[in-house]
Image (cartoon, rainbow over all chains, first blue to last red; front, side):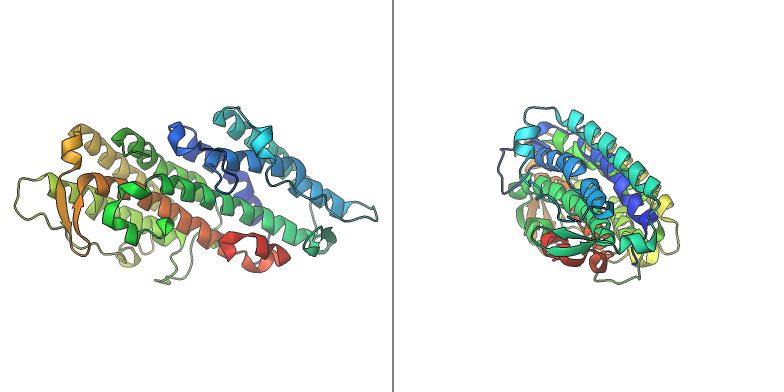
Length: 173
Length: 173
């Protein structure tokens, strides 16, 4: 599948609403866990997505599009959410994520990026040279990756309840 | 997490709406693929979920709860959707899934199952003896498993667009 801004935005603009629909009415046992930094609960994932809207995707795109000489991105703090969103209700985090995402998608649209601009380069602190198109495609896949992480975590809550069926459920294996 | 009907139903009753929100407004490139039987598209997954509502979860629970001597389930056809839902629009399948699921959840509630009933047994054609509680817990995890399969498939569409970031995206590896 070729990268197209419009199709990327289809996913980017749905993600907050898909997650809201998926998580908003659930008992906390399905969404909130210990603050285990190696096994993020849905709550921790939403905090991480919020932090990404503020400091990762659009700010990095702005560095690529800027006229400046230094195209190196700031490192992204993968664990910021464990401090920043501590104690806030999940519903608030979901709403904040939706607001931030909507504003960022609007900004992306307003840029009316050309195919040439999608080839412009920035420098990732660990990965080296990357293009604007790759950054935007990664934003999309990153959403899907975290939806996957959320359903994995939820499914694991029921590992001990499914008996012999465990063998058939790849999500538990 | 202990199995509780009410918490299981939270997931079961959300799934059709989460999937509708996630898939309904997307370009077909995100949802419909070749009818590859080893790599189901979101379209194929929704067909499979529909078939499960008709022939798997509640019908098997009814076998367990029935007074009959034969508690062995009918084998489930994992590939039925490739014939049954062929050619129907995805939006129709999502709506049908929601209707079937709502009716099944309502039936489950009306049974007002006791803890003792959750221990009643049926016989799975391959796995042997299983309990009603395990069947219902598996229904929940099966939903989450297929949401995972859907986001995996969608993410794979963009494998060639993310450049060096592929190394960080576990969903692509």
